Image 1: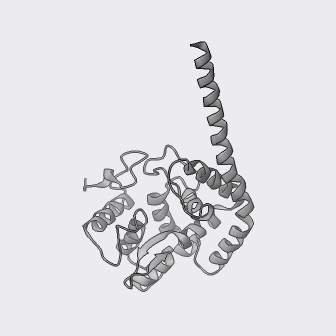
Image 2: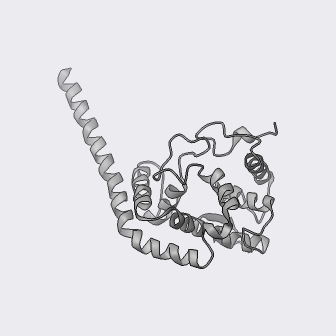
Length: 222
């Protein structure tokens, strides 16, 4: 029995070491990728396609829904209400660190890559890359759109800093499930999520916990 327990302990230690090594691989890769990513981010910012172009109010609205602790966390967030399992930095890590991301063990490397991004890039650079690459669903012509600015121009004919509050909430709404919540073909689910986001932005409600990314705590008016 004692030998079995020792074996189980050693297996646990080995698994933990393997997990840490896999996460560190992501961190190392992100640090290696950081110079090229920073250059790309700086170009986006110079072109007026970073967070600063949205203005502080719109950036605050986006972060409140997508990643409430973005300005303070180191790549992951396990506690903030509404944050869920994926921060903006982890979302970016999916696209930059993987050719084809699937959940499961790859979450370890994704988190390591996100921490590496936080160490190698500024928050402004991370946000610019996120805004440029976040999946936004299909346009009216059926072609897939990536990026907040591209989606806003396609669907509303203007930059996201200039659209109405409701249209900006719609843009934020589709980020959680761009395959289901289509701006080109609005449905009741999109209308419901948009309404929840508007109530959250008006501070009329709060998420029901850390994992409440769908804002069930804002499902109905107070």
